[in-house]
View 1 (cartoon, helix red, strand yellow):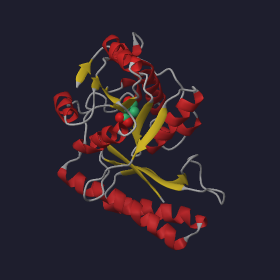
View 2 (cartoon, protein in one colour):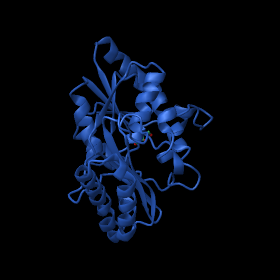
View 3 (cartoon, protein in one colour):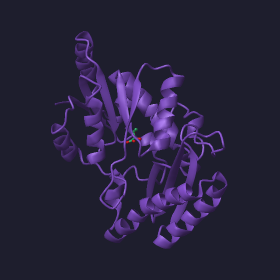
Length: 281
Ligand code: PAF
């Protein structure tokens, strides 16, 4: 496994692979790798001859006052974990490789970025789209994979690829969970022991909402079920509920009788720590 820190080194290796007719897969990450990330590397290996994993904590997707400085940076540990996978190159650019002199988000997110995450993090998707577009330019992947854990992000990136007519297949990897249902996330490292116990209730309450929906089998019941879930989350000790809502899986709009697939999406806070999760209904 090679480690590249500059786009120059990366493109030389990438060009060799191109000349050999190899298919390249990219796994973009911000590091602090857990089993969920490693499962993405494994999943893309079925579609690619060579795999690039990027590790870059992207400043433009964090707003002032968010956790950019505190975001866990565990590079040695990440590299150690990746040596046990099929990764061929780890790309660890610094901000100037991605942004030059102007560290700003320059691409709009598209309408799938409206609402939900953007209600509380309006800067977020523009930062994500800008960095992912740049990583695609530098790595020239044939395919890239993103976790379903960040479901709205996944749709935003698919939309970006379609809008820019990029010939990159976007794959999605299922959310990996701890034994008690908590979705794996790099930010789980922030949780204290008691917050960690409370956090497990998020997925339990989400599963209960899905079960109740299947019993009720009525879209008209959804607002009441969502309100009930908010109440349960408060009682479980979550300090703020940004949203818990069932949406159309493809458009993220409020579902109607035409909607084929439903997705439950939630974002909650435990003090300063924000957790998100989603699942099919
Ligand atoms: O999901 C993430 O880890 C990040 O948002 C991504 C896609 C690597 C862009 O920085």
